[in-house]
Amino acid sequence: MPYLVLASGRQETSVQMILDDVMSRQPDPEEIALLHNIFKNCIGQHLIRGYGVYSGTNEKVTTHSKKMDYCEGEKRPLWFVYSGMGSQWAGMGKQLMRIPLFAKSIQKSHKILEPKGLDLIKIITTEDEAIFDNILHSFVGIAAIQIALTDILKAVGLVPDNIIGE
Image (cartoon, rainbow, N blue to C red):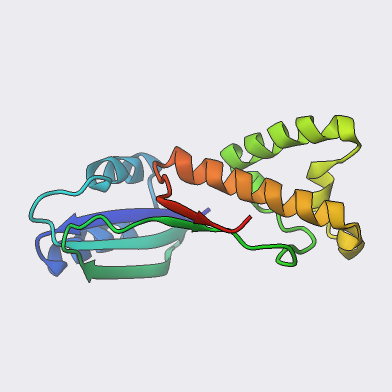
């Protein structure tokens, strides 16, 4: 599973050094958690902020994305933008179920919907395209995914200033 690594510094080279150091060896979840705790809050005079998305196997580390930018220290508003009906696809939640917090949220929704005759886990994990022929499955599936993703974002400290969508 890929890791998001955050970093900040007074100069671009210092942020680059942190991100390069992480990429130089296998991602260590404890080190990444420490970096998140250090850089989650704005540090005075750290005007350069950056991130990297990495994954690794025993042989090599892959960089999926990396970016640095100047930051004036102003808090920009955070918006959660939810897609509407029609954005769902068969199996849309299958890979996400590997994330424990996501799976826990889906299980909670599943237990609520089960007495109504809906199998939420089947709805979001089946590869059968016909599952969304029933409009109720489309609505329930996309809404449950959005709730679970919101639970993950809130768990990592992201609380929206505004929300757009369903």
